[in-house]
Image 1: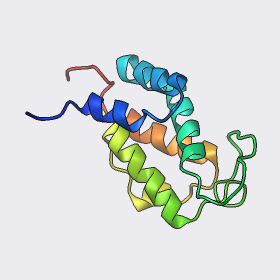
Image 2: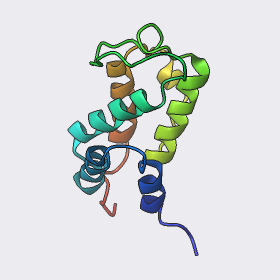
Image 3: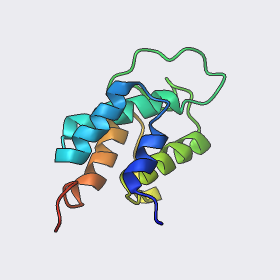
Image 4: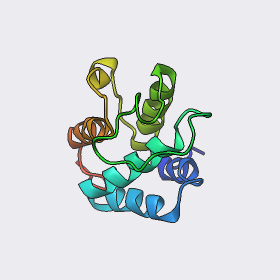
Length: 122
């Protein structure tokens, strides 16, 4: 029996605060773009490389490499997470200019905007 994709998403988000799962559900139910921001921000904090210290306060201008200690491997892991969670493909060209949390959020939002709204049957 095939696994329900939403079960996989819930499992992937299980370690996140309940508000993040709620945001994901808001996106999934109606395409709420504000919900994407909450999920991306939480994942960026969660996927930070080990040993980089306490995360600073994050905003759209927070730099992934300089402020959060990301390297190319950590960015790749984060992108794989988003691809699995949202069932999208994010190519290297899509993330070439991503430097900040806001850039990443916009990249993910563009990929999601190119698909039918969640829950639609078109």
